[in-house]
Image (tube, rainbow, N blue to C red; front, side, top):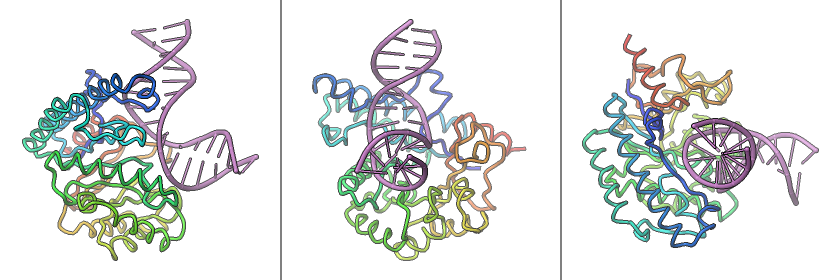
Length: 299
DNA sequence: ACCAGTCAAGGAAGC
DNA sequence: GCTTCCTTGACTGGT
């Protein structure tokens, strides 16, 4: 069974191998020089943690890794607006990036990302669109620095977010999609959601795959919460087909009390219906939950 | 050392 | 047309 870790290893966290972050409020509270120095150290740390996490996955038979979307905090904030090259210790950061690149090459771990839940390419607010595009481009920029393929093998997975008339929202989305670089476009995939009733697997497929060949990420828990009467098996295969020759990255999780809050550990096993899939495991106990699934799947 | 409160984001839902 | 909630992990400040 091919499983993928989402962002954080709880095992490494307990050994104080942890991501760090910085808020805009904190950045603004000190001189720009001082804040840049601190931010630089945080970013270098985050790439180092990423490298260690990838090697930790490889050592534990975990086949994939979803990058944190907060590796380089606040550099895209409108009032900060920095490229990595502008940071005081860029050489140190660049060196860490090269180590991450090497780790991916040596371990053959498959990586992807799930940029912020707040990204929206369907918003009526131009600022929201601009910020979303900037965020996606930053993800693609990091992927390019890491030498990752410009293909769905290394996907950037997002949601549509806005609910309502599917035709209308699809048009807005595609108009903004055209503003993205090829580095983003070639990796962008769309995941079913359950916040309203619009974006289940079948609608994503109908509007974005049939017309524009954008693959659909199947998330079993979102499907459970919103399926419009479609069986899980059918939704799985409908989504599977949209990935063509690329092995899909799907999401697996279980809900607490039958709700959408993620459980700590899995009770069941991801269902692959005999197909080859990489499952991002979205459970709170992270690698502990993955190792438990792998153990149980062997029996 | 620990704990409660803070921070960031866009959209939806509830007054 | 406001406020609150949703979500998440690290940070911050008080004890």
